[in-house]
Length: 122
Image (cartoon, rainbow, N blue to C red; front, side, top):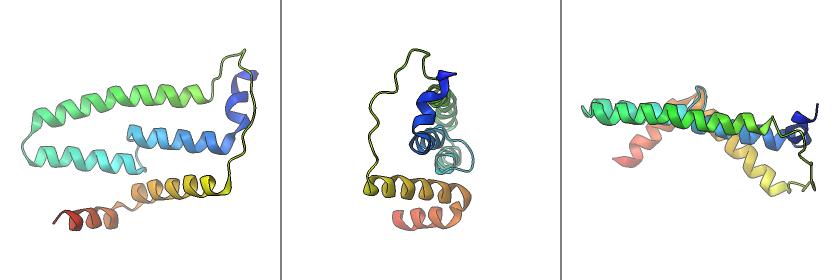
C-alpha cells in the first residue's frame, strides 16, 4: 500500500519528471522522439549506417535505463519515509509547465520547429 506513497505525495512534479524521462527515452509524441528520428535520418542520409546502427542500439539500451528510473518513481521501497515536503514556488512551476508544453508541442507538431532548426543552420 505504501509503495505508491512517494509518487502520490507529489503527483504533478512526479508526473512531469516521468514525462521528461520518457521524452529523453524517445517515446513517440514527445520532442525526444522527433530529435532522435532526425539525427538517425541524417546519419542514414549521409550513408553512415554503422553510426546510425550504433546510435539506435545505444538508444534502446538507454531507454531501458530511463524507464527503470520512471518506474522507480512510482514504486518506492516499503520502508521509505515521505520526509519533509517542500513547496514548489511559482517561478519553478511556470518553468516546468512551460518546458513540458514545448516538449509536447515539438512531439505533436514538429514541422515548424524542424524548419526553424534547418533555417538556423543555413
